[in-house]
Image (cartoon, rainbow, N blue to C red; front, side):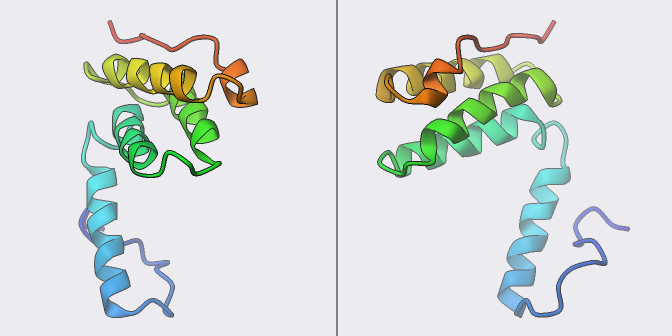
Length: 109
C-alpha cells in the first residue's frame, strides 16, 4: 500500500472531496515524525486556540499531554507538551481534567 492512499477500508459513502481530504490527512499522519505525540499536540493546541469555549478542550489538552508519555516523541515534543500543560492550567484551572494533569512529560533524551 502506498503511504499517500487511504487504507482499502475507506467507506464507499464518502464523496470525492471527503476521500481526498482523508488521503491528505492519512499522508500527514503517516509521515514520521509528525504522526506521534508532537503532531497530535500541535493539532490540539491549534484547535484549542481557535475554540477556547469548547467544553472538550480541557480533556483534549489532558489527553494530548498523556500522548507525550505513551506515543512516539521527537525533539520538539516536550516544547509542545509544556505549552499544552500551561494552557490547560492557565485557561481551565477549575476543570477536573486540569486536576488530573499534574505533570507534563519530557522523555526525549
